[in-house]
Amino acid sequence: MKTHRFFPVAAIPLGVLLFTLSAQAQEHTNPSPDDRLQMLMDMVDRQQREISSLKQRLTDIEMAQRGRGLTAWDTAQIAQVSPGDGSAAGSAGTPGGGAAGAAGPTSAAPIGETQQMQKSESDSQRTPAEEAVVQAQHAPLFDRKLTIDAGISYSYYDRRQLVLSGFLALDAIFLGQLNLGETKANVWTFDVNTRYGISDRLSVAFDVPYLYRNSDFISGGVGGASSSISDISKNSANIGDVNASLYYQLVKENANWPDIVASFRVTAPTGTSPFGIKLGTPDPTNNNLTTPSRLPTGNGIWAFTAGLSFLRTYDPIVLFANVAYTYNMARTFDDISTIEGTTQPAKVKLGDIVQVGAGMALALNDKTALSISYSTAISRATKTAPLGGSYTTVAGSTTNAASLNFGINYAINKHWTVNGYVNAGMSPDAPNYVIGLRFPYTF
Image (tube, rainbow, N blue to C red; front, side, top):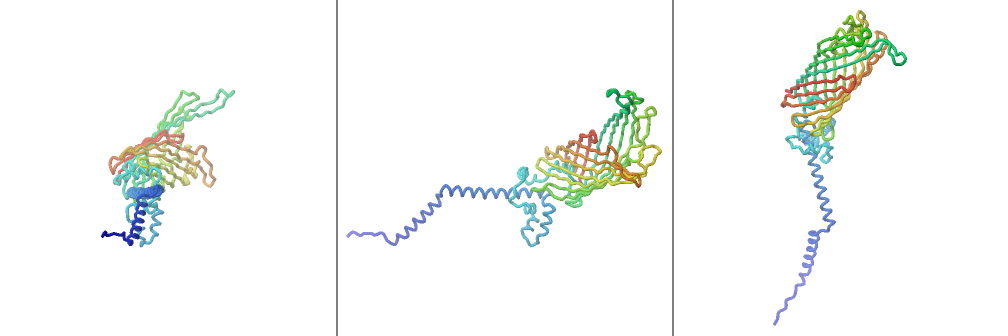
């Protein structure tokens, strides 16, 4: 007899379950095109956030290793956080952590920061060439180091003046006397500037200049003859006006802020005062030529200067700018007269000065940098007043001294740097040109 085998009915639910699981697995292994696209977009978005976070952390570590990081205001905010806050303690205790906490791990890097973030950790500090630019254009380094900065400069002035004493006849013929005056001045300045960083934000400086001046006074038109010329030379050498400066770093450069340094300088009237110097006629054949009995080496007054300087590094470019205001204190002199045998006590108020400058430097390599900048100093009019009287303005005493400046900085080693510069006068009140060298040595 043939035996029949029947399919077990109890196996039917198990088959349905297996079919369902197989269908779900098939659905997961073969998602729809829209689902696959959404998955890819989510993955790309997560990767972009991770890359942005890593870039920001690298930037913060680089800024911290350069000696920059938290701003003064960020430091005050962290100080207000309780010590029990683990995240704050970790941010303050790790290199770059404070800056990361202030800027946030996902904040976008500013323009030019890409090149900085691509630098390796060993190259994240300022190069010697960049440090030379900082010292020359921005402010002393705030790292508790003593720097002796010796320098020498040469300034040349050439001023010509045509004086007409007479009148025009028939609007074409001049009747009277001609006096052509010219002054050529050569000024050599030797100075030693001593700087010391008290803390990572506070620095002091003291500068002592010594000046040697040589001036040639040339006058033509003796007796109405333009071919007759007198030439008298004068020399003087003495200490100039010494000054002391205080620098405070308000903000250290980070991902969002440039270096911002506030400064205050006091200048003492230690040089030879220009007031009370008598004028004479050293050439008895030329009454048109008058020369001073001596040449001044200082301003003769106390001056106070407050300023702000800004610096931003976009490797290999360094941008810098500064603004300052100088207040010249009024002072009473026993004599301001230029006439021999005449004494005229009076009070003098030199015009206050506004200074503005900006420029950039390009690091050619780790040791050499070139810089170019423009600066101007605008002075208000000088006023004088007799004792007990009111002020009167000195005619023609307002000035605007503008110059275009070129410099080169070379770091010989980590201690010694050479800074050379040439300034070209852009206005009649500025020197024709200035050439100088400085040799800062950091211990």
